[in-house]
Length: 89
Image (cartoon, rainbow, N blue to C red; front, top):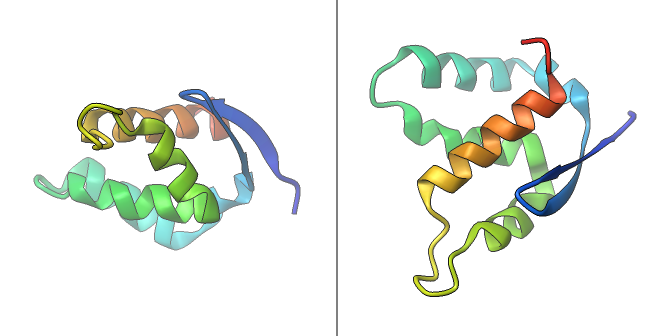
């Protein structure tokens, strides 16, 4: 397994690009894109893709004033990761 190092919203992540060949990832992508109201699946998808780095990423996305990692920032991070792993998709 060859890991790809990418930087997303200030966080360096090491991700196996082969994760996109996992049918669970494909299923979650399908649900997010084509089923209204299923955007909440983005958290599970992000966790599947980044694995043990999930907490580190959320910590980096957390606003110091509110103590929250906004959905907008997390979804943007997910989109940035997808662009890095599959730039031609």
